[in-house]
Image (cartoon, rainbow, N blue to C red; front, side, top):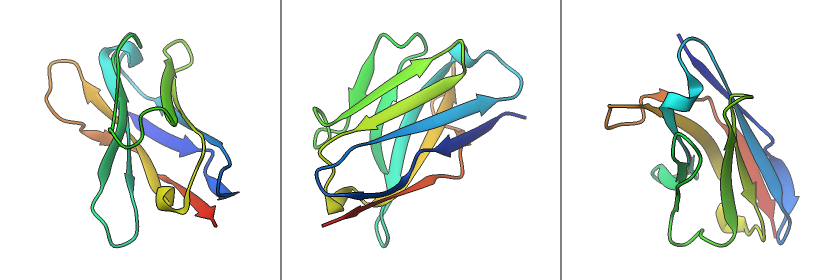
Length: 120
C-alpha cells in the first residue's frame, strides 16, 4: 500500500513564500502516477491547485494561482513539490498531495495534508 506524506507547511506572513513537499512510498513505480496538489480552506470545499504529468513535462494550474505557484517532481526521489510565492491570507488552507495511477481517471491516493497559514 502506497503512502503520501506532505511537509513544509507553516505560518508565513502575507507576501512570503513556502515550498511544500510530498514524499511517496510503497509499491509501484512513482513515474506511473500523475501527481497533484489540492487545498481545502475552513468551511470551503476542496479545490484543485496544480497537477503534473508522470514525466514532469506537463503542468496544469488553477487559473487564479498560475504565476504564483509552481509544481515540480523528482521521480528518482519519489517527491513532488509546490513552490508558493506572494502568499495571501486567501491561500490559508490544508494542502494535500494526490496521486492518479496511469490508466485511471481519478486521484485515488491522498496524503494527510500540511497546514499553510498566511497572516495579514
